[in-house]
Image (cartoon, rainbow over all chains, first blue to last red; front, side, top):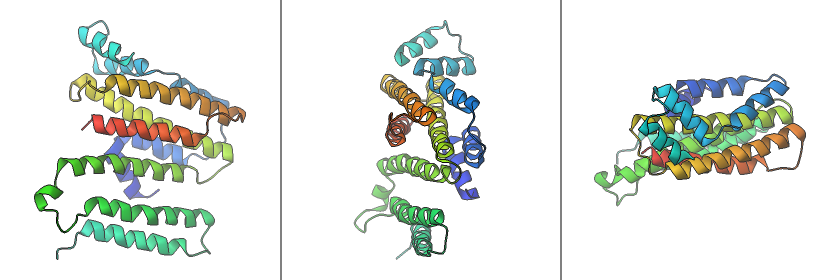
Length: 75
Length: 175
C-alpha cells in the first residue's frame, strides 16, 4: 500500500476509516477467537442499532420527534 | 490538441503496470497486482476523457461527475480487497478480506447516517438502504461462519457483490 492509496482512502472514507483499513491490511497476526467475536459483534448490529448510535453521537435525544421518525424509517 | 495530464498519467501507469506484469521473475503475487492495476488505470483514465463531439459544457455535466463518484470508490475497494489478501494463511486472508469489507461498508453506512441526522442528506432512500444494510449484515454472519468453521456457506464473493451494491446506493444517495 503506497501513500497515494492511503491518500485516496482518506479522501473517500475519512481518516478514521482509512486508518482502520490500513491497520487491517498491515496486520499479519494469527486469527484469534477474539477477532472472530469482534467481527461477529459488529455484524450483529442492525440498521436500527447503527441509527441509534448515530443519533447518540450527534446528541439527538432518542425520545425526540426527529429520532423517532428516523428510527421508524430504518426499521 | 490539448492533452489531459490525467488521461496521460493513467495511460502511462497502465502501460507500465502491464509491462511489469510480463516480467515473470517477479513474485506471482506482484504479477497479479501489476496486471490488475494495468487493467484498472486505463479505465480510470477513461473517466476523465471525453469524445471529440462533446463540448466543454457537456463534459462538466453533473451526471459524469456522479458516475466518477460511484466508480472510483468501488475500484478502490476492489483494489483494497486484492491487497488485503497479500500474506498469511487462507483463514487469515479470508478474515482480512471480511474485515476490510465490514469496515468499508459499515463506515460508509455510518457516514450516510451522520448526513441524515445532520439534515444534509435526504431521507428518501433510507428505508431501502437500511434493508440492504440488514441483508449485508446477515450475509456477513453466514460468511463469517463459513470462514470460522469451514462450512460451505455463502462464498465471500457474494458478500462483496452485496457490499458493492450497498456502497453504490450510498454514494448515489449522498449526491
